[in-house]
Length: 313
Image (cartoon, rainbow, N blue to C red; front, side, top):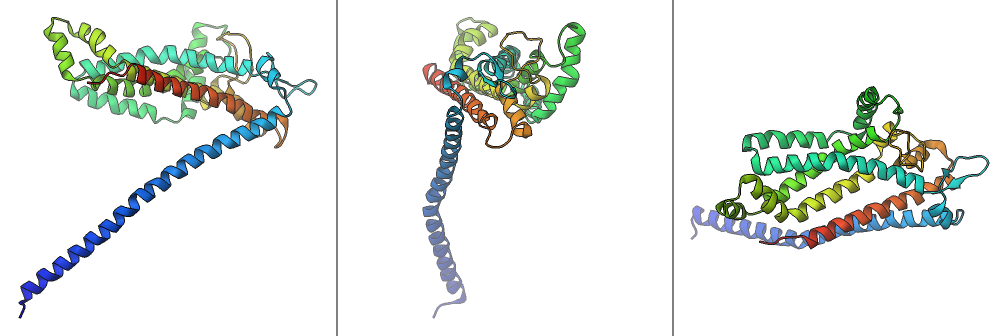
């Protein structure tokens, strides 16, 4: 006859088997669940791209593709003769992107090198969270910062500069992408094995020589990829350039005048300046598709650079 203790042990064994059976059954559903999530994300991406493509074709059924690429004026709201030349919007986007890159790359790389090679753990623990806070600020706040602080500051030094210009939003977009460059570049630098550093120092290199001539080239793939991704983020920025850049499509490369980028034009039309189903309405899809091509090229470049310069240890 079984004792009470033996009965408890048997019940415990039965309970454990039931739990393990439930866990095994659950394990079978995990890959299915993950596959469904991956499928949803892929289908969402395909749906977005197809929507963009179909609406873009609708636009080009009404406007010549050649005119879209070669015409130098972008006046879709003209009552007499509407003109759809994407060049002025592309030039506006490139001006903002170049100024942002000039602002962000030197600062971002300097901070990344400092955090990786020179900063103590205590300083790193303070600086990195602060940079993450910078990355979390809404872009509309950046936009008003550009309009109400940076622009008046620049105009006090350059009185001929217009209230809406390329420099102010370009600098602030650069400030916005600094955390991305710092974070990704610092990760790339930190991933270089300590043995590489010790070897360089053992051969008589100074710390700066070790950083610049050994660690930096070893992490070059990650650093270049971070820069390309950050520039890709800059070219697609919307709110900052909408608030501080103005809405004047221009074909010149002046940095002190008002301009309009691809994203700010999309915002202008999307907020009710054009009726649904009109040519102007469909033009935002053509502009969006152009922007999609730019960011796609940048992302492919980041992938190719990362693959080309990757160092394996």
